[in-house]
Image (cartoon, rainbow, N blue to C red; front, side, top):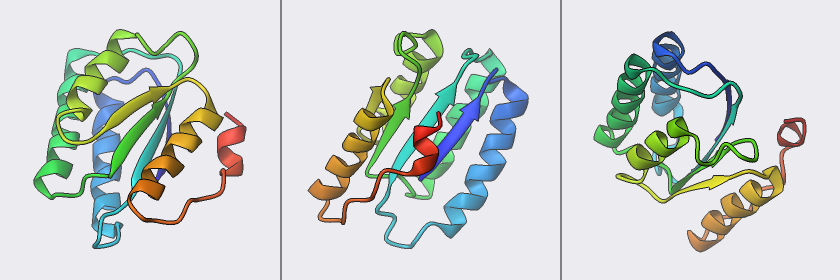
Length: 132
């Protein structure tokens, strides 16, 4: 799955994301073998309520056992050490392999590596990712 989100990642946006991901979770194939690529565009930053909503969203997926094989976060160069990215990394790493990339091609290479290792077919680079 490829998500694109643009901040600020406040409580209102994260609550909307939680509603959307809960719907998506119901539609994921029952074998749940997928890789999540999330592209986060500036501005970055998350307030305390947004972080709480984010933790609840990830926790809900873990409770339903709908966790991807891996999550890859794609951010702009220089944003890999942003406090929001570090907070998200700590939450995601509790339930799955997680990696931060700053280049779309490298992120997609990582997606295909995870798929290959899981015995799943590689996927072509999505044109929508090149537009980022």
